[in-house]
Every structure is written in structure tokens, then in C-alpha cells.
Image (cartoon, rainbow, N blue to C red; front, side):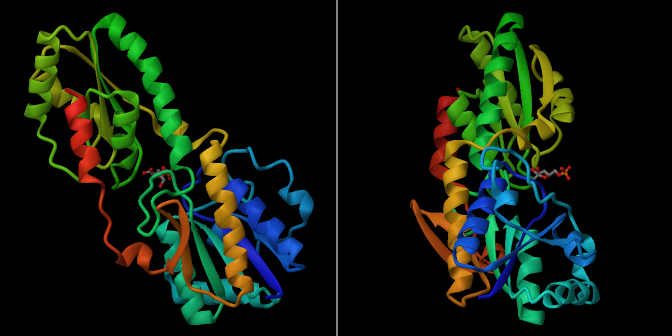
Length: 320
Ligand code: F6P
């Protein structure tokens, strides 16, 4: 392949920069012309496409966010808009595209391939860990550690005041962040969208804990279940501890990528360019059982997604 472009799209995730760096460096090492696209598909549409060189890739491995900037671009659902964007690539002779983002971003890539013959590879980058075809998405591990750090701090004050604190975490429709934060952070209650979450059971569990002499309760609430502020109001009617909601919000998306995310991003970024250079297209990269794998890009929304029931059961057992 002679020329490729890289973009990041959707919500940013720590580790997008090391993915850009690895893809870019591998491309340059193969003598492939390298372009960056600013603001994802919006920048492709608005022709914000620039030649990248080694200077654009240096000093970014440890930086959170994305140096290419990101945006959500609902206009891209319109085939006429996609045609304009594809033309902006073709007029520069760009044949291949590395898309770092979530499944919405993969949809756009799939259509660019099918409608306009642009060779595409998707790299899963989102804190939500909600992409089918990979055990981990880039950004999940860093985000999990940010949540764990917050839980440690919240627990100090929760214990001092003998409070129940509902910690709302991101994840969109997925409960992964809440589940693994419960397991790794010693959470005392868990609400995730993949399961039923009867508030009476939570209230009973909190009452039992207090009878057993526990001084605080940290309950992880995945945003896909609802607002921790509203759930706290409901819970107040059923249990008589002092209850506070905490919404961690966008703190969860920031910060330097963890070592795990940097390695995942680096391997996936390099692999994306190898795939394009081998003439292949229309695939997403995943990490399954500690091995890099590829799937047709549509696997990201056509495959079956399942959260580990075993891990959920363990979290429930340990949170009592
Ligand atoms: O997909 C990443 C994510 O952070 C979700 O967890 C969250 O629901 C959403 O993006 C928030 O989006 P925004 O930053 O546009 O409010």
C-alpha cells in the first residue's frame, strides 16, 4: 500500500496516542505515506487531513486523550456525506484507513470500504470495553485504575461518616467497568445493565452489612442502569444509612495510559498497518486469550456479547 491515514473517533480513550504512534511509525518504516485526520469523520468530511511525519508521533506514548482530536459525526450516516469524505481521501491518493474508536466508528469504516473501496482496519478504542471480538478495548484498563483510585479515596470518607456511597461509573450500555471495579476495588454492591438490580435486595444487603458491624458501603452503579442520584433517592426510602451519590463522569476518560493499555495499543496499531500493507481490508483487530486476532469488522456489532456470569457471581459473593 502506498498511502494511509489514521483517525480517532467517538469518545476518547487513554491509549489512543500510543496506537497512533505505533501505526504511524510502522507505516513510516515501510515507506508508506502517512496522513492524520483531525476530529475523526468530521475532519474527513471537512478535509482536515494533513501529512504526518516522525515529529507528530514523538512524545505522545504517555499522553492521555488523542492528539488527532476526536468528534462524534452523526452526519456520516448519510451516504452523500460519506461520498464527500471518501473523495477527500482519494484526491490525495490515500488508499488505506486506520480507525481507532468504538463500534459506531467501525460502522463508518465498514461503509467506506463497501461503498468507496477504501481499505479499512478498526482498532477498538473505548473505555467501555463493549466491543465484541476483543477481550479488552484500549482505554479500559486505565479507566478501571482511575475508578479504583477514586474508590480508595471515597472509602476513607465513607468509613469516617459511616455512609453508603453510590459511585456511578461510565460504560454506556455495558457493565464491565462497574463489575471489574467491584472485584478489584472491594465494592459492597453492584448494579449493571446486564442483570436485574432489585433495589430491595440492595437495601437488604446494606442493612445486613450494618448489622454485621460494617461501617460503610461502596456501591458501584453502571450508568447503563440509571442515574446514581435518582437511585440514591429511591434507596433512601428503604434503608436508613446516610446515602450519597458520586458521579465520576469524565475524570474516567482522562489520564496517562497504563502500561497494559500502551502495550495493547502499540501491538494493535502496528498490526493494523501490517494488515493494510498485506492488502487486506474490512477487519477489526482484537485481543483474545492474550493473542492478537482479526475479525470481519461487522463482527463488532453482529457477534454475541456476554459479560462473564462467573465474574458477576464472584463479585456478588464478595460484596456481601
Ligand atoms: O463511550 C465512551 C463514553 O465515555 C461512555 O462511557 C459515555 O456514556 C459516553 O462516552 C459519554 O459521552 P460524552 O463525553 O459525549 O458525554
